[in-house]
Amino acid sequence: MDKLDTDELNLPWSCSLYLTLLLLLLVPAGMHIVSRKLRRRRENAGTDGLRLPPGPWRLPIIGSLHHLAMNRHRKVVHRALADLARRCDDLAPLMYLRLGELPVVVASTPDAAREVLKTHDAAFSTRAMSAAWRHLRGICTLELLSAKRVRSFRPIREEQVARLVGAVAAAAAAAAPSGEPVNVRRLIGGPMTDLALRAIMGEHCLISGGGREEFLETLGEAAEKCSGFGVADLFPSSRLLRAVGTAATSTVRDVKLLSAKLYDMVGRAIEQHQEHADDGGAHGDRECLLSTLLRIPKEGDNNDDGGDLTMANVKAVILDMFAGGSETTSTTLEWAMSELVRNPEVMQKAQAEIRHALQGKSRVTEDDLINLRYPKNIIKETLRLHPLASLLVPRECQESCKILGYDIPKGTILIVNVWAIGRDHRYWDDAEVFIPERFEDTTIDFKGTNFEFIPFGAGRRMCPGMTFAHATIELALTALLYHFDWHLPHGVTHDGMDMEEQFSVTVSRKRDLYLHPIQHMGVEEI
Image 1 (cartoon, rainbow, N blue to C red):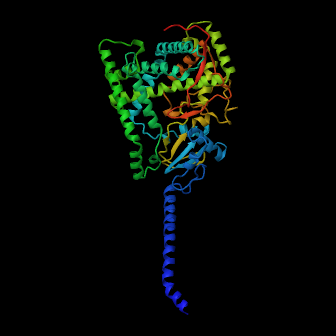
Image 2 (cartoon, rainbow, N blue to C red; image 1 turned 120 degrees about the horizontal axis):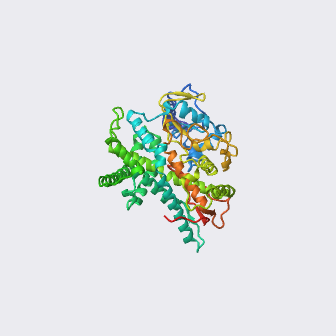
Image 3 (cartoon, one colour; image 1 turned 135 degrees about the vertical axis):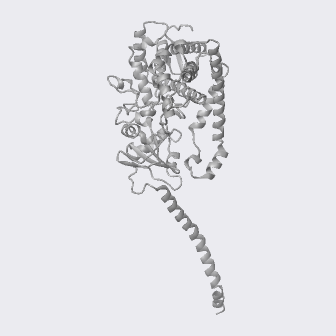
């Protein structure tokens, strides 16, 4: 009885403890359930009842991020996205992802690309095309990068390519005693960079002198900063993450400092250019792009709708032109040489055609390219497998629309995976194999009308510099194949050759290309 009394006395305390423990368990669980419902409601706001494209399963908060983080290609984003699309539906035309708070749709097939870049181009034009933008775009297209202007830079291209050939010959001679291979990336990079500088900013450019290396280093650093993203970018509604992210990485601050430095360097180069012009310097038919930009306001070419072309506009265009016209050319040439030494039968076929056509000339000119077909096919095949921009610049859907039967809500981020499109086995036989012959007897081109092959994009925002880039690549590649035989370093096999990619503003080789050049034809001194 005493024990019973004791238990009865302890009963209220036991009930209190039980209820306390129960509340400690139920309250967090209830809060978690409520927060999940609120989060799902927020995530699905505007998407209830819609037929969204297929996509991998998602987790709370992070959405689809874990699929990218755990993918074996996570460091090469275009490969990771293509891998996820294949898992959805043997390369799903459209794939829906949620990266944090951001709804993202990835287009991975030609049909999907045609829909978003042509049929619904206006709906995905994130940045409003104001009258000023149209005016500036017209200047770039008609005044700076037209076919006529590209032809006017022929002397510069031929001279810089001849310097490239001379640099390779000198490097080969210096390396011959030791038997060491030469660094192809470095040999290509210098002359191609100088070509872009001369065409864009003229012969008397400050940057092409002592400030060249500093300019290139700063530009590369800025490009690297801009090509990445932080966690705060994926959760734009979180003020805390924005504050922590900015404080932790200082990316925004660094980009602003680098941009200011680049603008200052370009500004000093413009001042020097103007001083040279005032002293009687002339460019004649080889007027650089900067001269054209500075001339337009003086000639009154501005219209009322477009507004004035300010000095800030001039600096921005110069930087855009250089960023898009130097590294891109070098990167494509390095990929082309990589594929050629990996496929020696292709290189031999190209060299036979080139050497038969040139018949012992000491220097390659653009007149020699007219009747050469196989090098053009090699360049196309290189761009198919190694597009400069594996992912086109992301766009945001400005109005809800339907694409291939799927609903695309307003605010969705669109990414076009050009890399996946170029390797779609439904459009390309042996899609992973380097076969330039596939472009023989076909009208497929990279000018934005064949959506299975869009290395320069398509639609109103496609790359305006493709004609300039192609002219440079074709001349340089032809000269390298004409003057030299190329061999892999000792111990490296064709099948075992390193072809790993590095994802950044452009997709380049992760490691520099080293080869043995053996001079075949004499080199004209410059």
